[in-house]
Amino acid sequence: MMKPCDSPEAEMPGRVGFSPALSRRALLAGGCALGLAACATAPPPAMVTRRRDFGLLQDDGSRVVLPPGHETGGPWPTVVFLPATDGTAPDLYRYYAEAHATRGGFVALLPPGSSSSADYASGERFAATVDEWRDRVAAMVAAQSGRFGLDPERVGLAGFSLGGDLAWALSLASPAAYCGAIVMGSRCGWRDGDGLSVLAFRGYRFALLRGADESDARAGGMEAARRLLDTTGIANLFDEMPGEHVRAPPPLFMQAADFVLGSGAVAGLTADRWRGTGST
Image 1: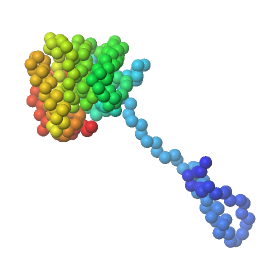
Image 2: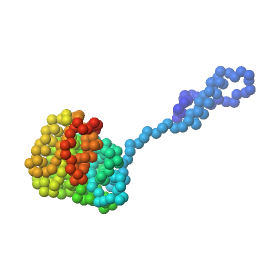
Image 3: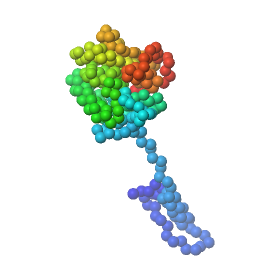
Image 4: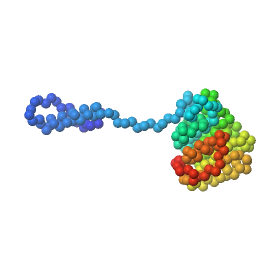
């Protein structure tokens, strides 16, 4: 195998007898030998930092990120992060990891698995995707609840894009399972029988967040969802951020988490209060 600093034909020099004038060939050979020695002793190149792994890895492949002070509190409200297209739950959580580590307030659950555009290639395929994630999230919450002191009455969902679609759909498909959802950049198109009436009865809360320049399909779908929630009597807040298809900036996300978890009322959220936004 070619070494970093030799050519295919490079040879180590032989012994050079004493002579007041070394030959050009010998000098070149000696230089190559010194170069080879330097290469052999040089430190290896710096390794590229691996993407950060969040929280505690569980047997089911999920990750649990505990807030500051977890060991002294409880039971704890919980937010389940859901993946966007071609992403994973940790991909979404990393946008809010610093704010969560500083501010705390809830346990973050990051379910295993990823998503792709095939998951919503048709109505039937999306229905199967909803069923798959409903079962996966329910099993994860059940498995980790006792171990980490989760409050079963205060488990919320959060997602962006396809993850937002899932947060909306799982709320309606399992209306007794969660307390609220942060829905970002979603069409909010899923409808499910009596789900809305159950959510209204239980005091469910939605935070609907989107970019100010979101596509007509998503903006129109979210507006229709707001009207539906208002008509049904389901508590909801709405806000928009500068940009098109964007995640909520951390300050807004954390306040939305307070709202859906019932940790505090949130009112008067306006887009011009936020400086940073997440990107697609």
